[in-house]
Image (cartoon, rainbow, N blue to C red; front, side, top):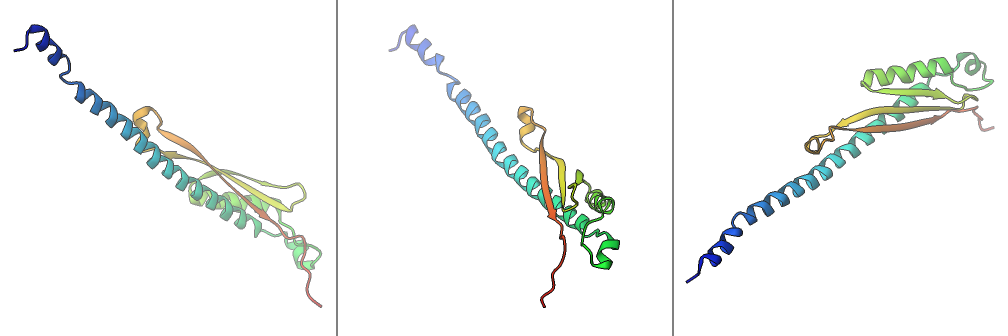
Length: 146
C-alpha cells in the first residue's frame, strides 16, 4: 500500500498533460498562422507587383504626340503618363506613386498597400505592409529596316 507521501506524489502530476497539450496547441496554431498569413502576404505582393507593372504600361502608352507624329522621337508625355498610371491605380483601388525619369526614358510605379492577416491577430499582428514595383522603359526612337 502506498502511504500518504505516495498519494501526494501521484496527485502532483494530475493535469500535467493538459498543460503540455495546451502549450503545444498554441505553438502549432502560431506556426500555422505564420505559414498561412505568410503565403497570403506573398500573394498580395505578387498582386501589387502586377498592378504596378500594368500601371507603368498604361503610363508608358501616353506618348508625346508632337514628337511622335513628326517622327523625331518617341517620348512619353510626363504629365499624361503620370495621369494615366495614377488613373489605373485609382481604378484598381490601390495607392501608389508614379515618377518619370528626368530624361523621360523610364516610368516607375510603386504600389503601397496592406495585407490584413487572418491568423496572426491572435499575437497582435493585424496587417502587414506590402509594396509592389513596376518600371516601363520607354522607346527613344524606332529604326526601320532598309
